[in-house]
Amino acid sequence: MKKVELLSPAGTLEKLKIALDFGADAVYGGVSHFSLRIRSGKEFSFEEFAEGIEYAHSKGKKVYATINGFPFNSQLELLKKHILKMAELKPDAFIVATPGVLKLCHDLVPDMPLHLSTQANVMNVLDAQVYYDMGATRIITAREISLKDLKEIKKALPDLELEVFVHGSMCFAYSGRCLISTLQSGRVPNRGSCANDCRFPYEIYAANPETGTLFKLQEDEGVGTYIMNSKDLNLASHIEEILDSGVVDSVKIEGRTKTAYYAAVTAKAYRMAIDDYYAGKLDEQKYQYELHSLQNRGYTDAYLVSRPFEKHDTQSLDFTMQLGTHQVSGEVTDDGEYFMCKYKTLPGDELEIVAPLGSEIALVDNEFGSTYERDGKLYMKFKKLHSLKGKIWDEVHSGNINPIKLPTKMPPYTFLRIPSHPDMGTYPKR
Image (tube, rainbow, N blue to C red; front, top):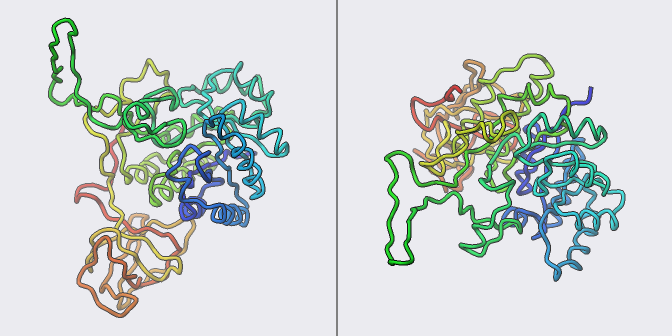
């Protein structure tokens, strides 16, 4: 049986490694302004991207290179050089967004698999057929598509791979086709520099040009002014429906510019969900416990299993971001021996250990602290905060750059977390 692929974002080399270590089968990322995430693209040099590809291939996993920007005429010669240079790094596919770039890639690198970006807004068999005929081997479908329509595309084009988003930020516009950021700040969303203007609060006015009067429209209390702010996508509770369809080849997580912790937790949660599906033991609580530990804009299951006109809960009107159930207190260093503080930590604090699936962490009790298991989860407590340089700290805070000795060795990039509030640690039921 061919299993569905789990595809995670890789905004930096560190995030690439973390996503793969925490369970992703493949990652996607890019170099330079031809990628649709300029902020993350700048954090990848060609050398680092090559190292990431080598790291993935050493684990039998894949890297898809994003060349999904919308180029101007003045950039076409530079784009050709970029395509050839990226091909030399030997990624497993290119992700492109426009018919012209798709054809250019096919002409310059005919053996490279080509994945069509969600920015192309494919929703039906006709469009899928056109891009398939042009050489696309996979289509990353529009976020607005339904499982029913995916089945129709697969029925007509059984050899065409289909990829769908299952988690991450949603755009209030049609699959990202938005120009509000361009209008207000000159940052062009479809060239990778969106300022997320839809996340801002707005006040609404009514003007009468004949009389020159201007009226502020007042909202009812609690309605809010985040009028374009979409909730975040979360389909972990629908993995069974998605995989039962038999037409989805890859499930994708959004978020190249998000944190390393986000890369870890989303990969872990969806890895567990996919593996549990094939093992016949799905546990919604387990996946949502992880995903609700992340900062989010509220969660929605959006449109894959429900039509857009049937949904009335896809917007967060009264806030732009909320804390997750947990706060990251620190991250384990590359050698696995030390803790780098990300949040105020004191001796005696109970820290939950978030390690890659299958990790073996010794249960110990020594001068530095203890590790122990409770209710199927691993925890750690420091007895003393002993730095690499030998200093003993009463407490450490975010920004403290002194590595703190762990009571036992842990896998690199393991995270330690605590509940954001004393009564948190579970997730709200649907």
